[in-house]
Image 1 (cartoon, rainbow, N blue to C red):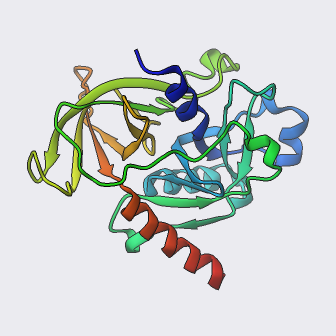
Image 2: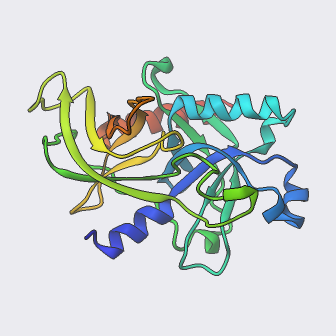
Length: 248
């Protein structure tokens, strides 16, 4: 069993990434009638920055175009069960694809005001180094199947991400690599989990970003992949984002 404190911290910091089907003013009047169209998952890296996959952002932009919605309807949504509100919705204000798109990562700027809305929604702790071990226990937290598990039969049923547990089954280019290029997971995932944090079960540290699952039309598989993440790498991306924001 995972620590309840770790589960609560991760659950609150994970967000859905997607598109509001109507302008915010209309959504505020009838939020349950116009739920966020969820394209993937993300998590709070610092108070004003969410990290997700580049393809999640691309899919959200494509969905907005399909809905003939402006980019001001791109949002993230946090669910903190300890709060009385159903959710904390924030507009995506600026984006960055770090390293010129060499990695499937995107950074999203949000506003964390008013502070009271984020009392229970705090950035996750990223591991100090990229050293991971084959067989260590991990879990992934996100939004499998997007809206399907949230709205069976088209009406709101539940709110918030789900947790899937497993372990590290391999590393690229080889087991034991000090700075692996990719993490192979044995975790049950699905579309919508892209952008989810991969968490060390005992400590609650982020060690990766889930970005792809191996799908098989004839069987359920648990093979999926993650981008390694450590403090140095995240700091480099955030510095790149800050430079963009200063120049904007």
